[in-house]
Amino acid sequence: MMDWGTELWDQFESIDKHHSHGIDFSEKYAKFVKERCSIELEYGMKLRKLAKSFQPKKRDEDRSMFSLHKAFQSQLSEINDIAGQHELVAEEMLSNVSKVCQNVCNDLRIEKKKLYQDGRHLQSVLEQHERTLEQTKKKFEKEWKECERAQGYFEKLDTDGNVTKADVEKAKHTWQAKKDSVEHCKTDYGATLQQFNTDQEAHYSTEMPKVFQAYKDANERRILKNKELMVEFAKIDSKVKPIIQKCLDGMEQAANAIDSKLDSQLVIEKLKSGFLPPGPKEFEDYSSPQQHRQHPEEGSDNFNRNSINLSKQPNRKSGLSWLFGAKKAPESANYSHLPPEQRKKKLQKIIDSLKGDLNKEEDGRKGMMKMQEVYRANPALGDPNSLEPQIKISTNKIEKLQSDLQQHEAWYAEASGSVQSSPAHSMSQRALPEKPVVTTAPLASEPAKSASVQKKQSLQKEQSFGDDFDEEPEPIGTCVALYDFEATSEGALSMKAGETFTVLEADNGDGWTRAMKNDLDGYVPTSYIEVTFFT
Image (cartoon, rainbow, N blue to C red; front, side, top):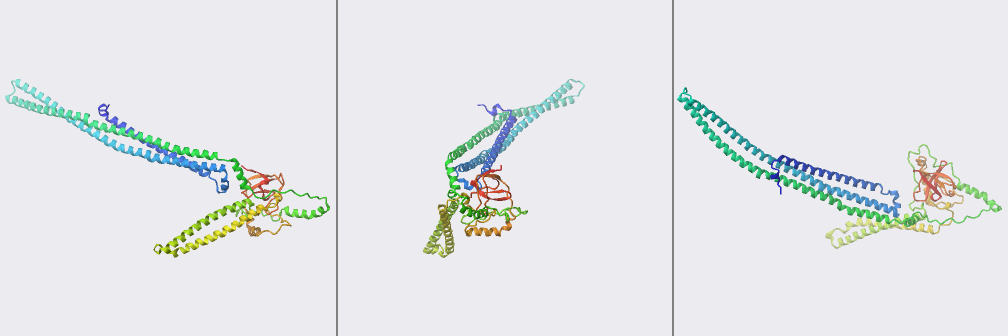
């Protein structure tokens, strides 16, 4: 097996640079995972926002009974769950991959710095030994050259007969001194060379290979850690795939549960008024003298019944109609303004809610009474009289709930009776809810109004000033009358088949649509018109 210390003995700087590039790559991978987490988190947030924006509004809650609406609601719920899985992926990738990778890179950089310092120290020590060797070598060379010059000078004087013996002896003595110095420098140079060779051998065979091996271990450790993090990156994604698939299966199951026939039946239950269909009209023979005599009176009666009182015109908008905003007709507590079937549904919903509140309150009172008995049996646990105020409050609440429940049950029985005993008269004369919009003349033979209607009219008179400042509604569409309709109640608007009206307010579930024609507006039966809304 090849070894970095043997094969790359002279590539210390290159090895350090390679290791630095490896750490840079790991940091780049950590950044990649972090940006992937940002994408997953943003995607999850946008999915949640999407699901929230399409949640049904409060005014559409009554439509949630249909299977199609339930399926869509289920899809929104599953989308919300899928968003949660993407957020979970982002969180786990950030903590288990990106941050771990960044921490590993930080540790590797600290280790790399120490390894580089160790390698550079060993190289500087070897270089210092080499400089010492060069110095001893140069000194030996210098002394040898000076010794040769001293020897030549001595030999020259020794052969010269004109030179005194003292000069020759002096030159000889200098030459001998240089020879001794050369031998000493030679010995130092040999010892220094031997030490250098020993140090160099240790440097390249023992000390630097240790540094290279540390570089190799750090590099392999980094690669293995990156491998683990890449595997974890894939596993985090794969763990949520079955959950997301389960959400998608739930969407499919909810879509398959859509039942068109059931939805059609629910439309009947939701919109059924409870009135009987109109019976056949009697033939009126105007050629009969007796009928002719009765006709003027009836005609006057019909004229009074169907004519519009233009003198009041409460819905003719005055100049300051925008100031106080539009007023809605007050609703009675017993929902008598609604058709019988819708009234029954409203009352039944309130009855169920009251029963639930009553059962909860009774259970709470029973619990407090049991606790009171325990306190009486063992006074050390508490004072039984301390619970009396709470029991009294609970009893008062129960009595109030029972009273409200009896009242609503009585109204429910009244509504049930009105469904069974409703007369078979024309749709134009049904006891539909009244809305104080357009004033018509009262019927000559109309019986005394109920207390609730009288109370409503008194409120209308008191609010007549506010009606003058009603905000004029914006048209939202047009409608065409399919049948004739004669206004027999206050707030209704007469119409003939084929007439076109401007729609001011859509049907809000009570069977009436607010329309306007020739500056007069009122309510017409929704089932008598065909509406086209503006897009």
